[in-house]
Image: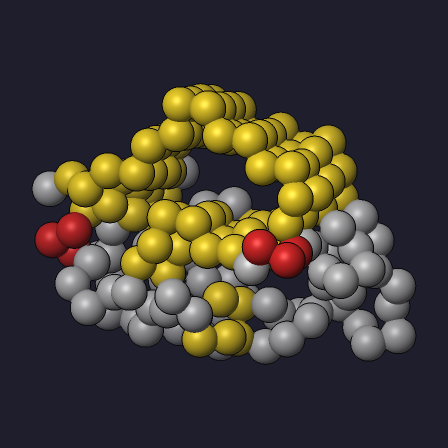
Length: 150
């Protein structure tokens, strides 16, 4: 797949994979999402994977297997934002992560490659993984790489 930035009025910020349990309305109850597998996926994207459970709605038992993620910029729209709409928050200024992780219990990463096209990422504040340790448990990494490419 190929994902790109569009004008900020569009929902989403070029994430190749986006999962959240943030409720759409303030009076909605948070649920959980569990046992989701991402297998044999390739992407070229202008932003990273977004996995955001919520305080009372964890993401549980996610698996990424045989996944190839390439990060490259080719539009002129502003980066460094995560889009929590329509639920928890609005757009939040953030470092660009290959994977942004919040409120997760159980994430297995097996044979995953993150490729950073550095020539096109000038001015980005990038990091392969962004997470607050207090919101994550049960991480497992096997054969994971983050590489600079031309």
